[in-house]
Length: 144
Image (cartoon, rainbow, N blue to C red; front, side, top):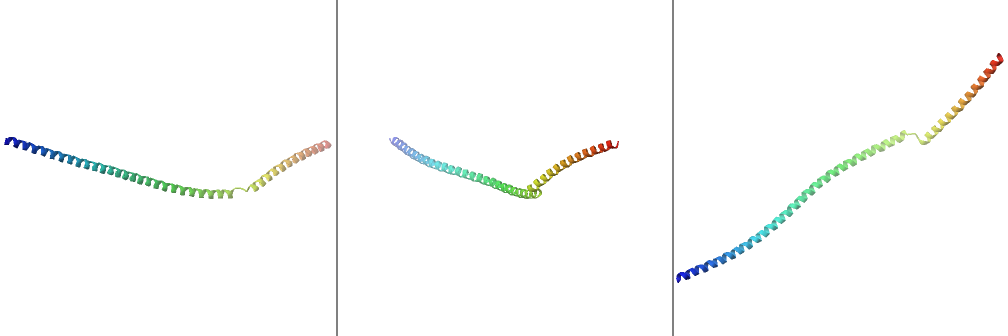
């Protein structure tokens, strides 16, 4: 019987060891689950941090682009202001070159008056020529 008792004791010991191992396994599984959750949390935080870093990098690139655009716009504004100044000077010079409207109208009236006088003079010349021809013809007739 001792053998049977000894076997029973061994069996009981093995059952107890098995229970201890099960408990240890449960504890280890629980520990692993906890570590797994911690790892997932850290990975999530790491991804969020990477996203923030990427967003910051994108913002920096956008900022650089915006700065370049601002520089280009300032350059364009300066060029346009220079062109505007040149155009103002050209307009001022052009105004100085143009005739005064009053002077233009007076000159035009003078030209019109001169043409009318020329027509009158031509009419008078034709009339006088006709009279001269007529007188010359009469004189010729009288001489003959």
